[in-house]
Image 1: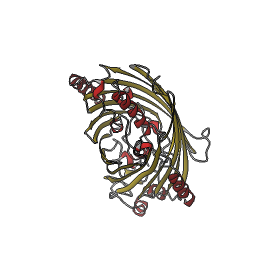
Image 2: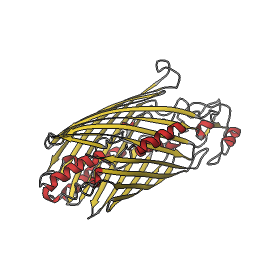
Image 3: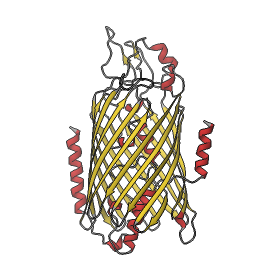
Length: 71
Length: 424
């Protein structure tokens, strides 16, 4: 069954990452604050919508609109 | 079409669009606080709960603690299957970084013109449609705990989509770790153009759960993980999609033409029928590292669903600064297996029987898509504030190989936009 395997992988990865997490002081975060380091997706909104229409394996992306213009 | 292009050119020249203004606004806020010795904005280290479906704002106005933004975007899509989409959009936002709240709204229009092989194979003429979408979102993140909410409405003649969601985030370990949880509900109504929804429609519900965490690995590296679980409930079958059937023993080659399919198929041609529910599971990871004057970002996403589809998507960007220029080449590979009930040629059995589940949607079949392109931004402002004016160009070309389909075996498509960003 795939879902439990996924959940296990996620939990294991998080545990490993948490153990390797460094403490970065506030004064040392200049590079992290660069615009290109944002955690948001840099993809063009239209590019996101195109993917949602062209690829059946979409997930978490239906916020882009259920109307796909693909009927 | 000419009017549309003229409008696009006019808007282009008139300055609208900006892809990353929202991201830059939050990141610049983080940079300002970081440079002043304070803790960076938590939003800069938080997984995005839901990517904005509209263009980010571009034009900023600041008075006291309030920041206002407004902007728009123009994009164009074209492919070798004769599909064209023109998408202008506008957006605006108001935020108070000191108080930790923000509100934004947007509106876009998709003008679609298509004469794809799927339309031609049903002896239909070129099809044109307009989709409109409006969105409203807000967030409040005064301290280590933050909440957000959003709503999106999308409407076209044969499809209505309503979505609303909420999210919560928390910064931990002196903002070295941020977790996020969100839920979104969507309700779609699918019908036929020219027929009222009250006469014919399918209703589809979506429930989406997302959990994520972002970690600072060191002073220049961020890693994020997100897990999505999505439940789709309802009949998503397309009411226009007729499935050709073939007698047992008839060989139909990959990429068979419309003429070949017409000559080989039996006269019976039922509508598409998909399963009435689908559960999707996706796990995504992102690594971003900032060098002295460049950034590398790598994403990996794994996907499975209860229709039997498995997929992997790898995305990489390298953005580097060259004085007033920022160049960002982009590569992306997406591969997916077919759903369990996928068949290139469905067979008509004895007694005029055919498979209960059937589809002609090639996006549910096995495919591989390679994307290449990138972005270019030029800072046009004064020496003191070079990014007060920024012009940007985005262009991506996508090549898709369909491994087990009728009509076509590959497709080229292009999506791009031009932007001019202004800041006060």
